[in-house]
Image 1 (tube, rainbow, N blue to C red):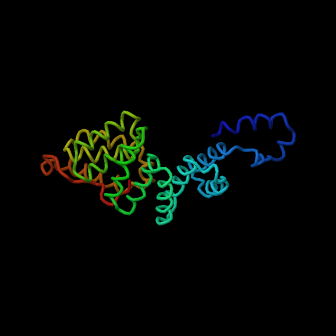
Image 2 (cartoon, rainbow, N blue to C red; image 1 turned 180 degrees about the horizontal axis):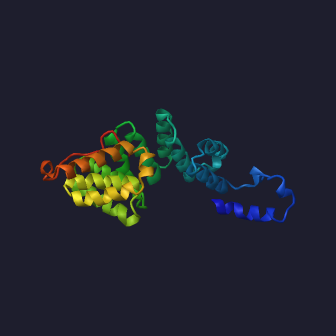
Image 3 (cartoon, rainbow, N blue to C red; image 1 turned 60 degrees about the vertical axis):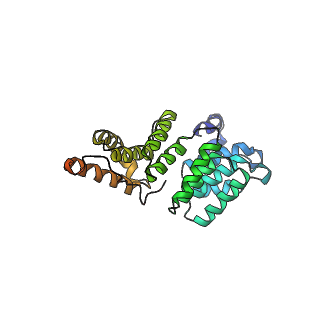
Length: 241
């Protein structure tokens, strides 16, 4: 989004007035699609208050799919569960096959440990959306681990890897999986990759899961005789999607 400002800054180099104050563009001259792009940038930067102000300025005729996706993303940053739940249900009444909104709805349900409903939402997101989303595949892998279907979890993680490199939550999901399978060597490689981004792990909502995984692997390596085979132990309990 920084690139959007470049033409304006370039003009400032040739304008004396720009040296004294920045004149904001007339909001009425900004297209609705451009406004949505600005809102997305605010959300990515964590500027939720500013994003909400801009969302409120989108006129009803322009409150389409992208508007509801951004509103969905905004609601996940709030600590108002019932409000966010109602918003997603409203969005899904308008766009019942939207994988982005369905996935976020599943994340929201997972926050209240409604795992069955959450996994159903992720499954719908995968089946109804023509686009394969990595976040959906990772969430389905986590669902499969909860349901003790290791083989299916492995399939979903493979699909997630084919889309892009696994993010932190994907790596932790894979670590959960290989620990269940009893592969300590693979687990150590994955944990080392996670620890390379340890600051991210400590600042994430999955920090408790990260600590659980680390302790579990350290215990297995310290006393291998206690962990000679695969187990159904998981660090997903109490964690969020």
